[in-house]
Picture 1 (tube, rainbow over the protein chains, first blue to last red):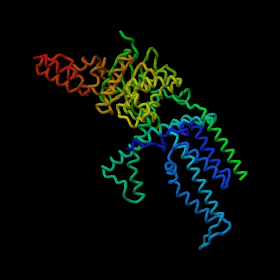
Picture 2 (cartoon, each protein chain N blue to C red; picture 1 turned 60 degrees about the vertical axis):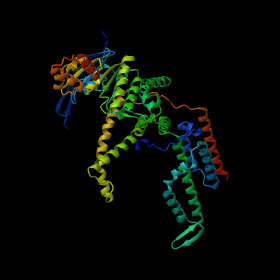
Picture 3 (cartoon, each protein chain N blue to C red; picture 1 turned 45 degrees about the horizontal axis):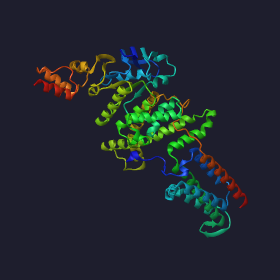
Picture 4 (cartoon, chains in turn cyan, purple; picture 1 turned 120 degrees about the vertical axis):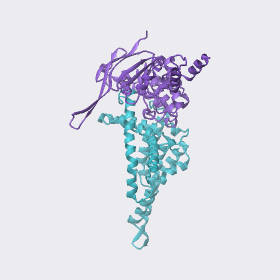
Length: 266
Length: 285
């Protein structure tokens, strides 16, 4: 059933990675991505890949779930690989017609592909092991320093969690409206692209109208339940760092230091 | 004599429509001079057909709308003079018609915690209150579920739990059963009746189903923004012609009893349920 769709791609498992504070995981992802740009040698990537493999093993998420995230970037991988193979200057290995393949080109392409794969895998680990709610909480907490610049962190987090709640409801509504319009003879499948786009209008307008009505109702309900912004608000489960969270930060620091060391020495 | 919780005096509410130059185009008097005392701990039903002003009236009781004229005094305080309105709203919680549009979180227990979180209550206390509220409405088994997987009646009970977690003195319900199936309707009504009896919470229920008001303490019928009838269910249902005059659909049993009475069968006044009618008919022989 469409109502049961889970947003994001959270994979339920009992692992150390799942238990980590979402703020730690956010920091991990950010530092990991940065670390991929620290060095450009074979050993750097090997080290980064080994580290990630360790994290994935700890997370107890089946590897094919991780790899699924890569499917969406296959096209990007192929294109960036081709560009690098054919356009980088250097020692020519093969030449045909107007194209030539260089040794340097092959190496850069390989590095590029590996880096992109690690980058996507690294962030997939986070989304697979953190519920969208935790992620929102983590973002709100991590970005709370922006409040001094009057950036509405709490409001954004609240909007994000409301979106999480209402997307499945709106998806179902889209289905309902589509069926209602199809019953009146609307055709959503046939015709050219322009015709298809035009066919969306009788679906989008009712959807917008009903979304605004829902938003109005929800705002009233929130006010009736004493919502008055983030000021003076408490949490049922506030984020609290545990010992393993501090250890994780330490591991992260050690990883970054090693990465820099590897890039300098090897 | 019970304490008066909400005192309403000559309440008027006008919806005003302006054109683009801020000129008044139209005024619509939705509530037109309502005076009513609601006793603490009572269960009051406000009946009326669509457009009778009953929903507008209800929204004044927790200051979602402010009176155009007249006063609303909640527990001794004039609603228009309360600075932090959430102090009023935590005492007078409201349940709305559409169960989907009043659930904020995608986890049941977090939604129940929304109210207390807004009030700045410490975490341990919130956890205790949420557990209590969910248990009270019989939804503790769904603590960690997604509200999307619940039925309409269950969603309304979650909504009620969300209010209970704020420890209200009064629950206002704006057509809480209008979008529910018969089973959900019974669930919700049973829950509020229990809370009214056991926790002594005042309930004001807006509805247009006469069937739902047979076992309340007091029924107020509104039409054109005015109170047109006020009394116990028995008193109200004994005046079928007047109810019909105000576009109310009378329950079948009540109507049948009335027709039988007209045909000369000596039935007592104020028959509201099938059981009562059966009993009265059996006694005739």
